[in-house]
Amino acid sequence: MTITRRNALKVAAASAAGLGLSRFAGTADGASAAGQTSAARVEPIVAERAAKPLRILILGGTGFTGPYQVRYALARGHKLTLFNRGRRPKEWPGEVEELVGDRNTGDLKALEGREWDVCIDNPTTLPFWVRDAGQVLKGKVGQYVFISTLSVFPDDVKPGADETVPVLEYKGADAMKETQETLRANMALYGPLKVRSEREAEAWFPKITTVIRPTLIVGPGDESDRFTYWPARLDRGGDVLAPGDGTDAVQFIDARDLAEWTIRMVESRTFGVFNTAGPTEEMSMLEMLYGIRGATTASPKLHWVPASFLEEHKVHAWSDMPVWVPSTPDMMGFSRFSNKRAVSAGLTFRPLAQTALDTLAWFKTLPADRQSNLRAGIKPDREREVLAAWRARKG
Image (cartoon, rainbow, N blue to C red):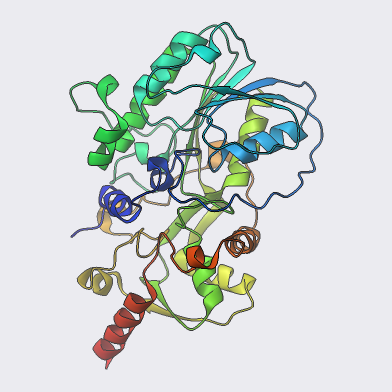
């Protein structure tokens, strides 16, 4: 099977059974992971107070990126209101108002008759969620931040694609009738529905919309293990299956960098569309794995295995080999999106070593059975089997 981003997402969907939809699709703040065992380790945030405190409404707020937004905003002196289904209560280092409703059923009554300086929409994958929020919040917020995804671009996007490049078009019967069930059944809808959601946000909140398109979001607290696999695997040591020849590009962003920059964007009332993909300069798979290895005390041996051999042995990009997608002729732009506009707007990135160490430290706080059952990445027995086959092939 030829590896494309759509295929990679489908494989990820199958391997992420039990996880909330946005856990594998790249949304900042999604549904609860089944059997979720631990929140990210809470580190005290040291931040200067903002020049002007804001009233910030966050739709979601208790998933992966949302809690980092909340804690950073509190440290900056803002007043926070969260709106969600109330299924995952959190302890916050300050006063946070929590409103309960359900966007799946259109229950937004708790938002009626209220005003905020800004609304941050984290979990939306469906256009009708934005429409319903718009009907209640139009004229009631001064800025609407929609967290989208780089999956809005087609597979054959060219390297260096910026925010002006054409995006996917929805070709179904009625985007407003799509549900989480129809999306799970057809992950090819994910990008087009995000595009329609972006446009819905801009229609309801013209000239005051900020669209943020993250790449793979990583860091402590990510229950999908999409990036976590590598710090955990390299820390375990031994012979490690590494995909390709090491030259394929990778992009990711620490959830804390994304969250903190999002808050700074609302403080500056910055509008427009932004690709948020790190690091600042292009990074290869080799640089990522050796960077993670250098941050641990283990001494694993990496064995680089060609993409053709992995495909022959049904080792899938993105799911079995997280973060990685081979740079085939029709996928040269994958993980090579331009982040210049976001960087110019103040987006910064933590060092890879810090993300890796913090992610590993968080992962080691999880129960032993959870640590032994990573939700992404090739299984140990299968890894040994493929490495043995590769050695035999080489002679």
